[in-house]
Image (tube, rainbow, N blue to C red; front, top):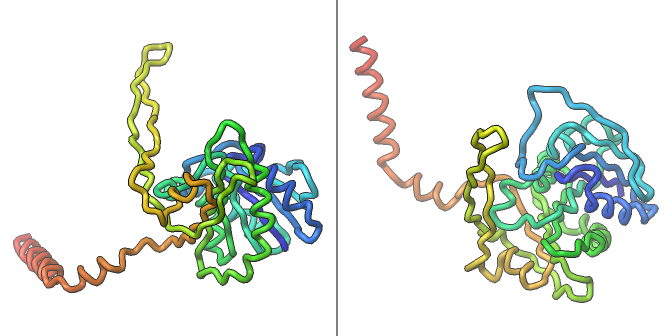
Length: 272
């Protein structure tokens, strides 16, 4: 299997290095890595449009076929890898292992998920994988799970332009309580900005806060990981509220509002 790895923590992050080492241990895998040259967390699906992208060949542990760092975002890295750097399209794209979870609303901000979503846009099977917080970082547990999972990917029959968002509890392998296929939870933040002053007396603001994990459904990714289960959430980029489409289409006021706007426009044009 030809596998492309990327992330948003940067080419030197321990998560992507552990994953590259573990997957390349299997000689039937051809592992490539293209990742940002520095941390690009919470960049969402940002693309670089107003400056050139530069790439540097890197050395990674294990039997990695080739690795590059880029000056771009996670999404840039995947797009550049598939269109220019790799000799052929990958069979699978994996983003991670992220240093911290990507649960609920976090998937909208996550550069980790964005890299996997870019691969999905390109019609490639993709996985985003993240490790929950903890004092000891057990990237080896997440890497081992992914190594065992990827052989099943061809049989999953994933929906076109979708990805699997996987979150792994930060516990030893023998303490993992199982695997749950989940929905995205809520996990909102009580964000606030701390006002501070720099040494020159100028004001700046620092975003702070923490996640609120209350009232999560038992079917959610948040609930699963907090209960020491690996969460697998199928994610699609199409965020259309189909129930609202049906409700709104039944409202005569929408057409009436359009006709009113047209009449007002005609009257304004006549006055001019």
